[in-house]
Image (cartoon, rainbow, N blue to C red; front, side, top):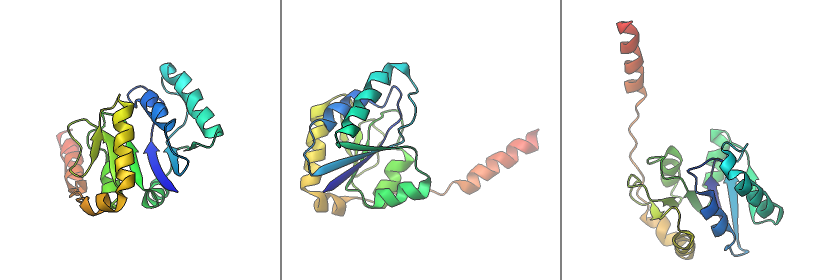
Length: 169
């Protein structure tokens, strides 16, 4: 059994229709965990929420609410692919965390994804499906090719910004 983890929010910008169309193409040996599903945030996605629930009832996906960071990292560690659907999220901390754990990432193209991320066109289910199938068919190879991202620890910089702000007031 292969596992794909995908964090989505029920609002515009997460290309939920493309995700649903992709989920309908899955083989029985691939499971998808949708994390972050909570309440519908944009009425426009109400129908997609109902479709996701139908797919969950059929056993195609497992939808879970928000996970705390430790739960998310534990689940990510056991995942074959991390799927990221929005285009407006920059490089995304969850993408960086997946790469740090050598979990292949398939993400919508937004021109800011780190090296090692396999990108697809956000509104193209055929592109998404082909990228996922390719990664699953060559999972060990993709894992070996992942370049762990170098992420600067910015806590000290952030503290100094706050200190300087309060000094001005």
